Amino acid sequence: MKNLLSRVLPFLVFGISSCKAQPELPSAETDNTLLWEISGNGLLQPSYYLGTMHILCQEDAWMSASLQEVLNRSKIIYMEVDLDNVMEMVSSLGSMTMRDKTKLRDLLTDEEYAMVRDYFNDKLPLPFSMMENFKPMLLSSMVSEKAMPCESTNGMEMMLMSAATKKKLEIKGLETLAYQASIFDSIPYDLQAKELVRSISDMQNEDSVGHAEMDSLLLAYRSQDLAAINRLTSGEGEGLEQKYLDLLLYKRNANWVEKFKSIAEKQSTLFAVGAGHLPGDKGVLALLKQLGYTLRPIANSKP
Image 1 (tube, rainbow, N blue to C red):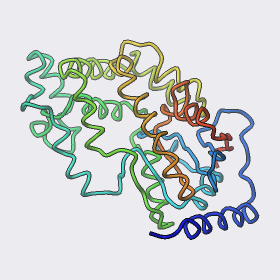
Image 2 (cartoon, helix red, strand yellow):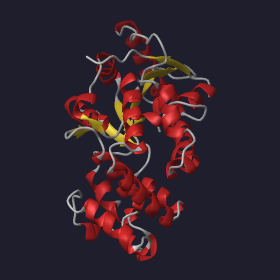
Image 3 (tube, rainbow, N blue to C red):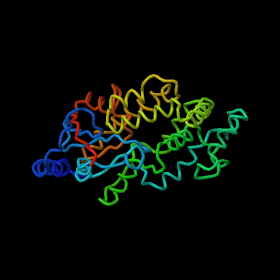
Image 4 (cartoon, rainbow, N blue to C red):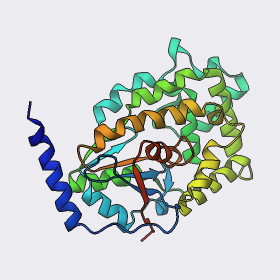
């Protein structure tokens, strides 16, 4: 094992030289930004947190000058999962199906099942018969994508992956796809199935509450309004997600923050996770601040 000095000195030299060579990134005038610098508390160089949205209209997926500079300074990118790992994605397929060979048909009435089947008839990458044993909340995420007010969709993650490839940056995941899929085993399948039916029914009506909420969320994301994002993602509501916030949001936030130090103390890192994980008393920003880190909002204006 290398001695302590040989491990610490390279980081120390890099930290000092980088401070001299790199100008400070511009601070945002308010906390309305999705890009944050995390420093102090023993870190020899800052790391960064970026709030993303997994599904966006093409025109909403863009990179600010500050984010491009953050990519230049970062040595690695951590996303929620490693989307660059094809083998992991393939091996996780088994964890996406319901236990005990349960199928969607077993959880719904004939009328409900027919509605879901007809909705997904030409909207899935595989025949519906091959996906009806998937956990219903995974199918619900596809409903949200089809409800976007545009034909061409993209996500910030895909844009970051493209940039990482050009810059030869490694991408890693804070979680595995298998772990994410396993979370849904803690939510009764019949409740997930009923929520899927409700989502499809809601999204088929352009004047529905679901469409209004989607529009509000897109507006909040474009405005980088963390307070509004927090209200929309963790506020009181009838949706299944709101009933299981501790499982879907807060415990995962705590797990990621627990991993932060061991990752960020090694090298400057960009953490890119869903924007809903950033704000609130149990969001990653508040949890990092509680641990003694210095947080600074970075200007993140659209080019």
